[in-house]
Length: 196
Image 1 (cartoon, rainbow, N blue to C red):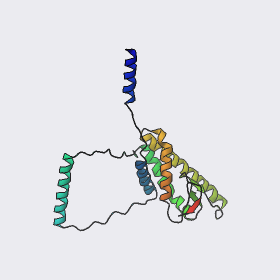
Image 2: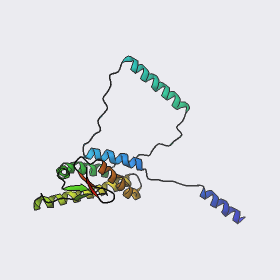
Image 3: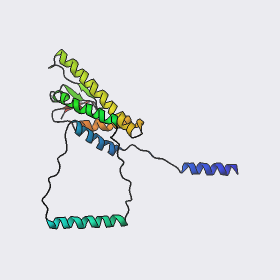
Image 4: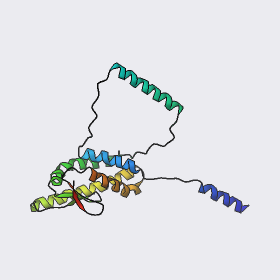
């Protein structure tokens, strides 16, 4: 009898699986939003087309049909989870990153700094800088890198998964490189430096 009980308990517990996975697509979307805000690169809004009464009537009919269909047919898939990007820590770090970007921009453009493969900044070329400028640029990069790391941890914490910090960092790393502007230097995953 005891064997049957333990066997049943084992089978029952084996059927319960909680699958918590890292939402990579949501992390990419969050990274894009944050980087665009930092660099003040808002995507262009599509131009509105002039519409007539016929197009308004057509739109109303389409909306009505869509609602009727959605009442009859339920979605058979789960929505892609979003990452929470709203906490006091995240807002403060984003504000600091946005404020610092204006000081970093000329250094990106002159090739003084570059994006490493891990998404952090590094000094690439100091030949055109004075000793004082080198020191202030080093301080600026250290602050930027510290804030980027704090941002990744703050996003992970805000989503109740502090263990996601490294995965968030990896997703941001690829998004920083894709948002690099023309002329900026970035490092590929295999360590090769390229200019965009």
